Length: 314
Image (cartoon, rainbow, N blue to C red; front, side, top):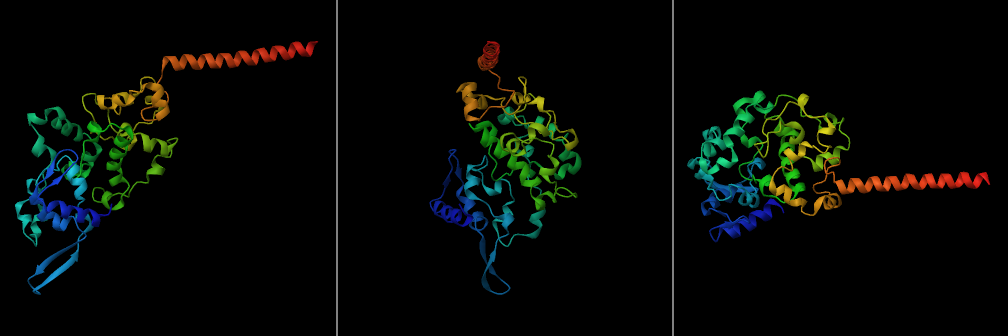
């Protein structure tokens, strides 16, 4: 759906005071003031110098998708919960662009309400990551987790494919975007296909495995590890995933919401390809069946060979 169509729908919803999300949240009515510009491709204002109403194109980086906003974890927040109330007037004061934005820890750190999410420990892990080591405090949570749109997909989704796609798009939003990559790095944008040219079936891996499976240190106490490793230390051992003791059991498939999608059993997982990894999803019954089939095939060949020898000797 185009941004223009979304904006039309948003205007209709805001006219009655609220925008409701599929998660039971409601977008505060006061956000309509901000979104009257930031959810559209153009905006209007009165130019005091020229004494005329002026219409201009909105900077595409500042256009917000209101549908994604209300579906995100912060969908019920007012814009000024995170941004300065001074933004309510236009033209905005130029100095507001220098305003330090709130980080996850500013709101969630030390709060028992969110203790289960372990934000403080995640912060400690992040400080070990290559992102923090190279960029320091300038690399904030928002570089990966867009505060306007973020959804806790790994905790809520019932589809592995959705979790993989959502998480990988976070990485690709920077590592596959030259403009955004250059805001956090002085180097050239990496060529992902070339960097991963050692990986067999690249496309299959990119579509079915999260980048972080190979590029982070797995921590049992976290749903998602935030210690991003340098590329030199990334996992390259196929057997670590493709074995009965697959590390994916401690990462991608570690929580109940992921276990639930294997309700059809391992045969069902093979057929649907939703939670099946070659070498990892080993079923004793299937293994025994495969040995029996292989044995019968060998026996059939042997019997055929014996009959040919007997027939030839007559």
